[in-house]
Amino acid sequence: MKTWPVPEWLGELPSRVNAGAFAHEAGFGPQYVVNGALAELTTIKVGGPAEVLATVHDWGQMAALRRFCTERKVALTLVGKGSNMVVRDGGIGGVVVLMGKGVDRVEVRGEEIYAEAGVACGTVARAAREAGLAGLAFFGGIPGSIGGALRMNAGAYGSETFDALVQVWCLDALGEERVLKPLELKPRYRGTELPEGWIYKAGLWRLAVGDKEQIREQMREINRARSSSQPLHMPSSGSWFKNVVLPRDIEGLGKAGEKVNAWKVVDAAGCRGWVEGGAQVSEQHCNFFVNTGNALARDFDVLSERVEVAILDKLGIVIGREVRFVGVDG
Ligand SMILES: Cc1cc2nc3c(=O)[nH]c(=O)nc-3n(C[C@H](O)[C@H](O)[C@H](O)COP(=O)(O)OP(=O)(O)OC[C@H]3O[C@@H](n4cnc5c(N)ncnc54)[C@H](O)[C@@H]3O)c2cc1C
Image (tube, rainbow, N blue to C red; front, side, top):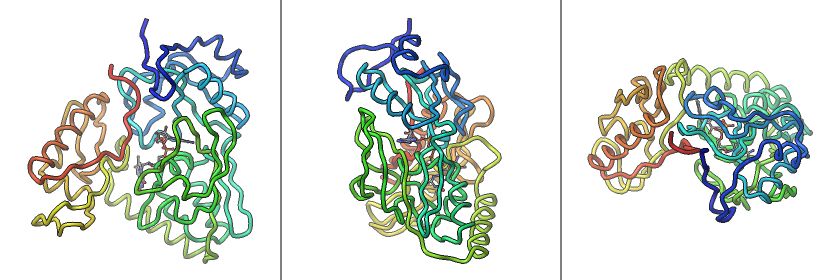
């Protein structure tokens, strides 16, 4: 029988999920499957199954499941819209949680908008627009959930998730609700410091009053820009690497300390179009790694390492991945 690693922060005891005990003790009902396929739940469409795949439909269930997994030392992994994760070929041990209906509320309150982790960023962008509130148009082009956007501090076209955020609701590792000010989560470029085992539940954004038609046009413009520059017709996880701060002057890229788009660095290292198995550095946008049809997660890992080595060898730059690999090798 396959054994799965237990996350370090949960301690050293080996642990397996007993599906029957899981359902009964977590008071969870029938909304789970054993060996649940994950590849199709991610936008890059690779990877093995979840040991247990569960869908939560309310925050009480989510809290009970969080507590149960912490007490039993079972790993719990959240999948939002799967648009920034590559599941490794051996799959994910423990419980993988999907956000169902009931954890996706979005509500406009005057000049503020409240949105729960399960709702799509695009839905929130449209709700803000319809209420004539400006500042979240960039969400319109991000194919993730609010939970994933909070986790990643997702951003585009000069705006980030944490910019206009005024309050955040989380569940801690025992499922207790915590209300925080955004700065307590130490937002940074494409990341936050959410304590181990915590879950983003919701956010509240305070926005400026804007013109609905102007916001609509801004969203259209963002979509036009994306579809002309990004390989949206192919499975991918969006931007693969994080943008880079140049460690020194590099001819053709810029001066020391300048922030440079990752695609320019990948291009300067000569990696555009590189292929490994079914994974490819997109010809159209070389910070997108695309699945040409039959890729394994391993192909993406190997391709990424080849590109990282080329960037280090040719340019002396250490580039970091924006996409998150989860699970174990096959
Ligand atoms: C075509 C395309 C374009 C993209 N464009 C952009 C862009 O312009 N800007 C940008 O920033 N990103 C972009 N992305 C990447 C991605 O959409 C964002 O990072 C998004 O915020 C991820 O959300 P998700 O729900 O898909 O997260 P997932 O991929 O499901 O999860 C990402 C991480 O967050 C964790 N997580 C998910 N939900 C929660 C929660 N409730 N609490 C705690 N942790 C959680 C997961 O465990 C995982 O570690 C793009 C992706 C694609 C495919």
